Image (cartoon, rainbow, N blue to C red):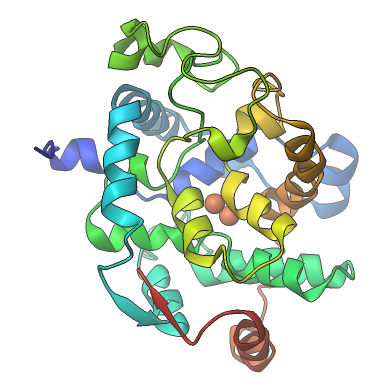
Length: 293
Ligand SMILES: [Fe+2]
Ligand SMILES: [Fe+2]
């Protein structure tokens, strides 16, 4: 039976952007570049937000078990819930963040466009630009009533011991897998360097979107989409013992992508209307007109 969560358990954050704001505190832009961009991190430090983010991770680390992920995969990877034109999904994403919050001056479309435009400005191939543009589309999981901690948050492998390099590692003690001897050794159910293809990740927008688009984009794009929230690996190298050589090669792309995701915020927001024709063509080049959710 599916567990029912209270509203408080489902939505510990004021909105799901607070997770990404917190990431910028944890992984601030290197000093030299900060000076250039004059980015203001002041907003991210207020203590109320620290508390909600902490509660968010408490729930995430408590409930994201091997069985929980298996259940979500069975439920969502059939893609039998809804068919939506691509641009309708984008419009939906934009309703996720409450723009009455004065701290939030960026809607989802703006975040996607700032990411993709920064990639485009650096002269990367068009599929990389497209990756920036769609990378957070998996957040449509909110449409189906998923708790925030099953949509966003740092992702991590399930089925083996949780690394202490994952943010708030102490919260894993309440996770049933923590005391399950199938899962609580360094390798758990996996072989050394088995390759991430064989590793189940905690459930969220990354894994969901990966499966949605895996037939349409080149492999580096798929790695960027699937592992962009796997901070314990791409920032901390905490799971080198599960990656194979091919993963390590592909993670160069994940590393390349991350700064565009975290630090591409610009003071003059991109003109969504003017950019729309370019992105319509780009989306049409790679993706079907209607996506299955
Ligand atoms: Fe994301
Ligand atoms: Fe993002």
